[in-house]
Structures are given as structure tokens and as C-alpha cells.
Length: 295
Image 1 (cartoon, rainbow, N blue to C red):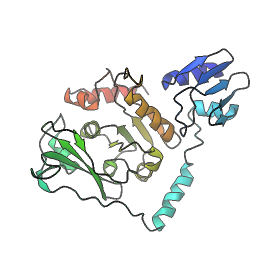
Image 2 (image 1 turned 180 degrees about the vertical axis):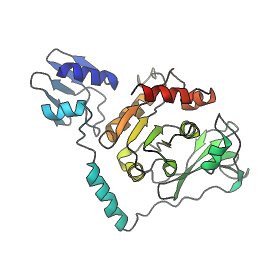
Image 3 (image 1 turned 120 degrees about the vertical axis):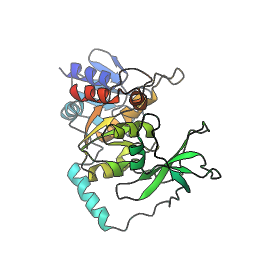
Image 4 (image 1 turned 90 degrees about the vertical axis):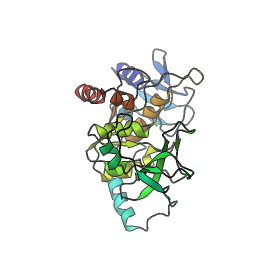
């Protein structure tokens, strides 16, 4: 029974493994260990997990809970985390890099990339002056859960490179978390994917940067989020790295968030078609419905 559960878990989360009968060789389960070469194993006779590299160890009871989604030794206990948020609210807020939004030329309130003008108005999008460093771009302010301007996305509208510009800021929040209105959230890699979910009437955030999501979950908890959907792009495997960026995105967030929320994978109907592509085709609501029905 343990072996079937383990293999199912590894296959579901796209984790490489080698079945050697009484042992299954795999990469480390610890979210703190970036294990590119399998250095861990599950002893099926004794029922434990052990990493020979970092010494991360799960006894049989913890391993079963881990595979069942009930255990995360790294994540905070929810009550402890809420208490820490209360304690933090009494302390002097940390000093952050001050953000200066580019000068506004006019509001951006027209349909674009399948997204309605109402949604662009909702996120307070605007166009910059042509002589600005961020000139001829759509500016989408990133406001945190406390209503503070923390960053922005400057998206080209005329094919300039790079496609998106961001200021260098403290990245410890999810973009658009101030707009969360439901107890479930779709976490995306790109701003237009998030806006597509919002345009369909759902709550969505953008994962800024490459830092740990453990530093960003305070806003989700403050908004009462119970369930998160991981919406990494369904891109194909890179022939050089033999990895899919979207799968790596989902895998990383899964390990960091599973102890705090109910975590679900968002399945796309085709490869190389992201949420914004589906929305432009008028199919995103249908695909969301399919995902929610298959729970």
C-alpha cells in the first residue's frame, strides 16, 4: 500500500524516481534542498524516507502524512502564524524600498488581450508619458494587502524589449493581493494570466520574483484564503535543461504552501496555451469550471 501511494504521489508531482524493489530512489522532499540529482530514498520495508545529502528524514508516520498532504515540517502552524502576524502588527513596520510610480499620461481603460476595460480600471492601469524611461507602456501598480504601493509592472504595447520592466524592490508579497475577494486564489506566473482570471470573476495574484513563497503568505492569510490553485504555464520541456518552467513553478509553490492552504493544480487542455490565451479564445471560464468539477 505504501509503495502504491508513494509512486502515485511521485507521478502526480512529476518527481523523478527509480524503483528498486524494496527501495525507491528519488529527489529530496525537503523544500529547502534543491536536489537536482536524486540523493534520497524510501525504504519500503521499514517505511521511512531519508536524504543522504542533507539528512532530511521522515519516519513512517510522518511519511504517510506527507504523502497524504497533511504534513509539512517546514511551514508554520496556522495558529502560530496568525499569532506572529498579530505580534508583527504591534511592531514598527519594516523599512522598505520606496516606490515611485512613473508619471501618468492617461488611464488605460480599453479592452486589451481579451481583458475588459473594467478590469484594467479595477487595477488602476494607466499609460506613461512618451519621454519617460517607462514610456509607451501600460503601468499596472502592485498594491499590497495593506493598500500600499509596493511595485509596478511596465508592459510594452509596441514590442519593446524587454517585454515587462519592474523596479528593484523588496519582493515579499504577491502582486494584486489587495484585490483578493474570495477564499480561493489562482496563483499565476504572469500579470495578464492573473488579470484573465480576475476578468472572469475570480481572485488571482502574480508571483513576483524567485524568492520563497513562505515570505509572501501573510497577505493571503489576512484575506482569508483557504485554497490556492497553482497555475504555472503548461510549457513544454526545455531540451537544454530537460525541465518545464511551469512545472518547476508549481512544484516549488506546492511544497511551500501545502502546509497552510488546500493546494490544487490547475490543468490546461493543451500545452503552450496559458490562461490569457484561453481567455482571448473565450474558453477560460469553461476550463475553470472543468477544473472545479474534477476536484
